[in-house]
Image (cartoon, rainbow, N blue to C red; front, top):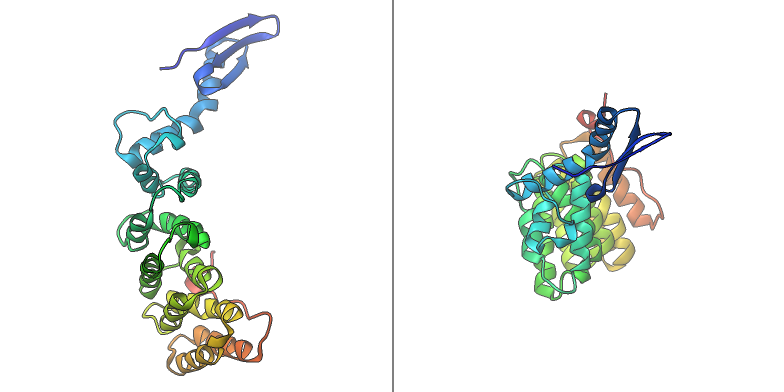
Amino acid sequence: MYEVQWAETEHGIFGRVIDLWNEAKGSSREEVLHELEKGAAPWLDRMDCISSTLGLTGRYHGLIRGLTSAQLAALLFAQDRDIAFAALTEIEKRASQLSFNDAFIAILRDECHPNRRTAQWCVLDMLEDYRAFCKTDSEVQSIVDAILALMMNAPDDYARTIYKAGVVLGGHFCNEPAARALIACIDAPSRIGRRSAMHAVFHLVEWLPHHRTEVVAALQNAAQKESEPLLKEFALSQAADIDSGAMEHKEEPVFPEEVSA
């Protein structure tokens, strides 16, 4: 229940809910209440989503920045993606104070939660600045291993999460652990993972040109045994572009079932 303040004027009846910064105007109190409820609905739904995601009793009335770091990590799985992104922003603010590595690894390796792709995308987005979260070589390697595992057996690319995983390794980590992971993933069991790696190695070589010969060979070998015609063509195209030092590459293929009706 929320208290409503009222003002009746010659211009109509005004109602205001101070706690929600919500106000409305109408010709009757019933009309104003209806408008107040409609205006507050998105906020109340947001609070209810936070509560249900965190397993809280009753509606959460606080601010997201008032939650614990563990609760923020849990909110990355929220059904409402705006909530997940708000949690992401708060986690980034705490990167220099706390270690989120274990939480990130658990999220990247999750294979069960129905909202895992949203959470994984959020983690990958934060890892574009991985040095803010990984303080040691060991932490970097453990994160790279988790991203590789995500790519290797990915059954789908929902929310473009697997695509982003490759981009993060090839364009942001762009270090030796990332190079080993991406080259290995060119032969991943998952065709989604293979596509992501075939795309990402182009950008990896931009940053680590000494891997050019190895990457070209890996793509050519993959093309010889590739069962997916679209990926066979893409692998050969990427190999040719990387070998020639091209500045652009062919756009990665879209599988038929990924094309919206």
